[in-house]
Image (cartoon, rainbow, N blue to C red; front, side, top):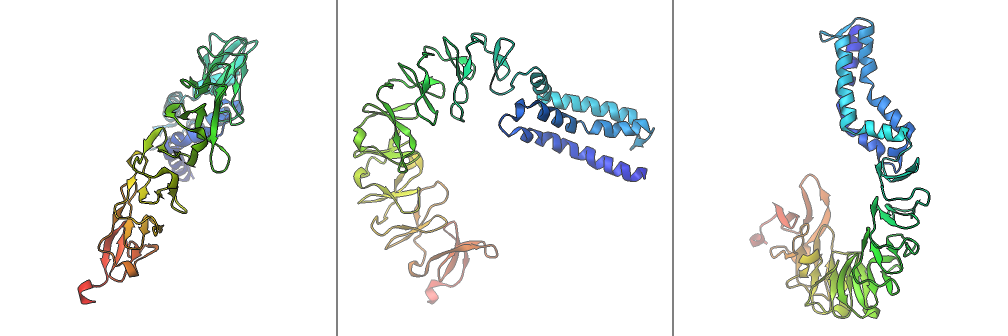
Length: 360
């Protein structure tokens, strides 16, 4: 019986380091790091080696020649140190005092953010602003505005409010704010976010005739010409924009559209383009009228088969047999994803030769 218990004890002790390393995942749920019962429950669970070793002490038994007393004291020291390193002691202390370890709390006439005192805040008039992910961190009292516990300089507390229901951008009577920073040159009276193709606010915004991406100023535009292509891509009649930068200066912006069912390629009346951020470029030799996107990074037009691996530029596959080429399901046996009558392919490269062209 003792041998069985020793085996179980050994397995549970060996398992404990992995439990400890994975324990932060128990606090992934929003607000769980501020929940007193949850924190206490987790700490009790993480201490399970102590009562396990204490049983050996109580019954005068040994584990691998180590006395129960030594086992218990050693486990206690190790667990206390581990809990301290992982910050569970601070979590418990804050929770017992009613102070939030994450976010704002107002306790005993003192405002805290992430359990650190916000010295300048007036606890009597203090309020947390917003309800969703983007607005986390904004708060105010009767005189000042705060972002993540820091004073938001020059913000007007009386007029400070969310720009729209997304609560991503905030505004007072003088400035627009994003991520706790004022957007240079943005006018609250003219500022508006550019809707995407589905009518939802995008990361592109206009202040009069000035175009912004997030808080970055792009330049002067005609507001009526701006359209959103993807969350990171926009255009007007002169330019294509990736984030806050102008890309593809050679492209014909009025005819520039995504290829169907992809956000990785586009075409205009003269060319086809790889969309790979600031490295976006025309695909050499590609026909915009007949280009179509296949699966697994392959494309074809009326003349060629193409392949793009990851975020590298698309290349023509010169040795592929155009007429018989097809993209297949992944074949684990042959480690291939495409084929023609002569070969099997993976990532645009031959992985198995099926026949010699010269023999056909």
